[in-house]
Image 1: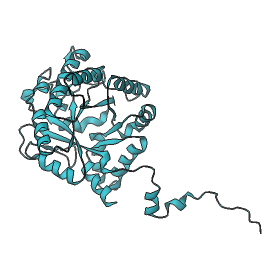
Image 2 (image 1 turned 45 degrees about the vertical axis):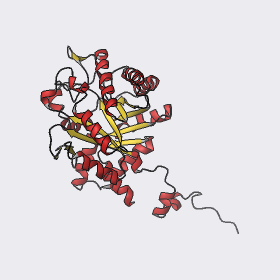
Image 3 (image 1 turned 90 degrees about the horizontal axis):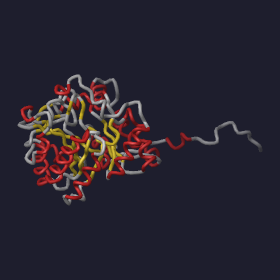
Length: 332
């Protein structure tokens, strides 16, 4: 008997019948190994204090950060990115506190590595937490001097490496800084210190809550970082930036922000096939978290956003939701 086909040849819905099938056939998987938790350490603080513009995120004192790291490890978050909040009295136009071997970052790194030698510690390299003008480098005639800044960033990197950080992460976007830092690290026998370059860091409006968190927003005022951070309009320039940093010795490259730049993440991974990280920045986190807390979006939207990073090609994600999402991953 002959039957004329009246139905589709392929029924893709067959593979979506239940959750076990959907998990079995998933093309992208997110695990706690993919997540990096940024932490803010504040000088002179006892305990912790909430960051108003970042729901559920705190600044920690050197006494309270240990319990937070213990909690992160219990949730299988094994990598943290550390950012300092120093006293305003220690800020100046050249960011000298950044190269002080006894500064907040160095003391914290030493103490963390003594207590948690297994934790992978990423340390930010830039001058904005240390300058009274809020820029990432040395300001001259309202312009950040690239080459003079390189010397300070190199000293800052050596200081952090000496303290025991695992990964140096220059976020300043000065030209040539990866080459300068890599050469200095090798010469001083820090050959195993990893360089994670903020290779494609855009001049984004999504950074506002972070600048509040590190108290650099008031210093920066109405000034712009557009002369050194990338224009949101450019794709090929990002590939050029990444190529330069790889050639200069970057071990890992990063795209920042994340969701508005998924196309950049994809292009970078496809083009260079090197370890590629993404940063779900403060503005992305806060707007999603606030919408969840208000009931405007379901809580799974945060997880969905992080899966989009993995789908685009990110190998790991810096996200303020790392600990929170680890609970969802464990329960799924």
